[in-house]
Structures are given as C-alpha cells and as structure tokens.
Image 1 (cartoon, rainbow, N blue to C red):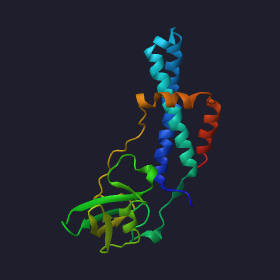
Image 2 (image 1 turned 135 degrees about the vertical axis):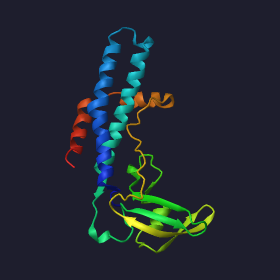
Image 3 (image 1 turned 90 degrees about the vertical axis):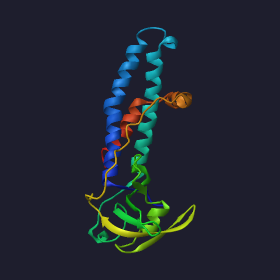
Image 4 (image 1 turned 180 degrees about the vertical axis):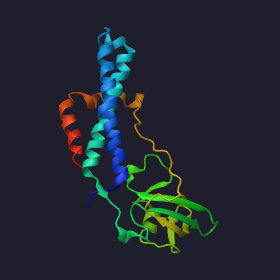
Length: 204
C-alpha cells in the first residue's frame, strides 16, 4: 500500500502547526508548569494541573504530526493533469436533479483542517470525479441513491470562483475525558527523543 497523498500546501500547513506547537506553545506551557510547580502543593494547584494536562496533549499532537508527516507523500502539480480532475484539483460541479452548484478541492485526508469544501481523495465524490474533464458527468452513490454531477470548471491554482474557508488548526484543548489517557501517555516521555523526531521533519 502506497503512502497517503498530500498537497504541498497541506504539508506546509502541517509543518506550520508542528513548528507552532514545538517552538512556541510548548515552551510557553512548560514555563507555566515550572512556575506553577514552584508555588507548592501541586494537588491543589489548578494552574499546575491544567497546564500539565495541556502539555500532555501538546506532546501527543506533536507525536502524531511527526509520525503522520513522515508517512505522507507530497504530490506536486504536473502540467499533464491540466484539463482533467486529479489530486489537488479545484472543481466546480453542478447537480443534474436540482442544478445546485458546489465547489470542492480534492486533497489528502490529513489536510482538510475542518474545511467543508475540501474533500478527501478517498471520498465517493472524489473517486467519481477523478479523470473527468469539463462537461463530463460523474455518478456519485449517496445514501438516497445515485446522483449525477456535471463538471463545470477545473483549476489547479486557486481560482476566483473558489472560496477558501478558514483553516482550523492548532486545536489543542484540554478535554476532561482524555486527561487520564494524555497523562498516562506522557509518563516517561523523553523530551530529547521528541525533539530529535521533530528535527527529522525539517529534512522534507
């Protein structure tokens, strides 16, 4: 099985998040943990407990990003793709039944970042559109049956007709349900080992 695909922009966003967590947020939280620990009884210290949990979640996310980025294959645009729908394409489609319009971009599952108009290449919609040209139709299987979509436009540089939704990233929040799991996963964690793995991502 091949490596999961990701666009260059998507990979850069993952790296930006990793840099932010490791170089900015983690040092800030680590400093807060040290300050709170110096105040005395840690069991009654809310600042210490909160930031210790936050630090565990940051480390978990850093480990995930590091492992994820090492497995991804960056796919650059190839001029031979022009005119047809392939990975990385911006596509405008129109429904046959009600003439509704939808604009989507086909990307890797790791770079959607909460954007509704980015779809994974593994989704039924993307699979139906792959290889299609402008004017072609694609049949997509939905829970309500087959639905036909016509390909109106294709682009590989962000076109004016595509609205770029805000990227949801750096989403590190203390979730009470995950606290015990996070702290357990962080026990015995070697910060130098995490740093070495982070440095490996700079080689891409």
